[in-house]
Length: 404
Ligand SMILES: Cc1cc2nc3c(=O)[nH]c(=O)nc-3n(C[C@H](O)[C@H](O)[C@H](O)COP(=O)(O)OP(=O)(O)OC[C@H]3O[C@@H](n4cnc5c(N)ncnc54)[C@H](O)[C@@H]3O)c2cc1C
Image 1 (spheres, protein in one colour):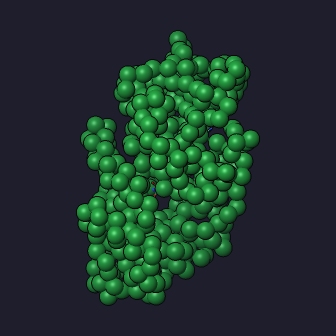
Image 2: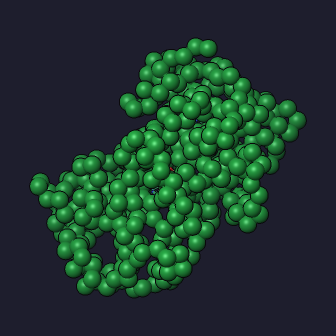
Image 3: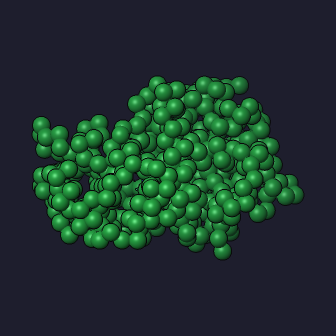
């Protein structure tokens, strides 16, 4: 079998793939032996699924068009938060509690610093239903938390000015995960354990009756497996338009990293927590990258392949104004880096994990809906068990089914 590096492949027009420097070290191929399962997409959902399937003893091919955690993918940013606070969606809080342990174990196994303890502060104008629901779940699950007034917040973080936000809920155990690095680490571990990595864009090929026989690779070639898991994030509606058009939405999101003043570590992790309120959320500076600020709104539909990742000046101005209000010490600081990303939202923001209605050996896994990354280690295991027919949990199956 021909083995080349991903870097060489990037030069080959047939591959139709670009590369990031870290993924270039992985042994990407253009083809693979038939496998028990072919996973399409090496983001948070697909990468962890491939790793778990392999660890459960199955032969696996993992194919990606642009590489794990690439700049177009939803998993591609520097950082993602891991928090138990989920309002009344306790099922996800429970998954996060298990996930936090798994993340720590995997961090040790991968030998990379992927996690930072940051804590997370939710702010609101009053102690509203969302905060109450999170607080109740924290109490039930015995998760450390603190209900705060504006005065408490000012005392704890003098660099933060809560303004009209008179209520706070603090989760000290919340973490930040280095998202891009984690995707690469998962693909590396998968490869080390025998997963075949293929660089290429896959399309469902010929169906045989009610099963899919193979995948066609753009530019030539094919891949085959007994089962297929399409974990293609915001690309899913493009692959399965009949099923997902209008049901999995891909709104564009802008992310800004604002510089911190020279020699001032008040805005670095862990001196400032992850912060979240109705209009914006953000992260303290991690690895000197700057304070990350993300507006929560914006409905323009994104094209993950072709959109230019250039931010809009009026949105930057709004976020700069927000930042100056909430963190007066950051007033006037420059934007030092930006990202433009897209969500992959289901109508109810629950994950989408189900068998394809027409093809018995095809699974669709995605719909992270702005909160999927942190669940990687748990959701990957869950998807692997569903595909292998080892898990039956009607409540979860109903939750993760595409709603009409
Ligand atoms: C701005 C923003 C902030 C977020 N913050 C958080 C957070 O703090 N915490 C959290 O837990 N979650 C967060 N999320 C959500 C989380 O990032 C996503 O739910 C998760 O990364 C989705 O992963 P995925 O594997 O489904 O998709 P992706 O990461 O997009 O992966 C899909 C992969 O499939 C590949 N692909 C697509 N089509 C093909 C094809 N035909 N052939 C081969 N490969 C293909 C792509 O190249 C890509 O690598 C956030 C999302 C956004 C946009």
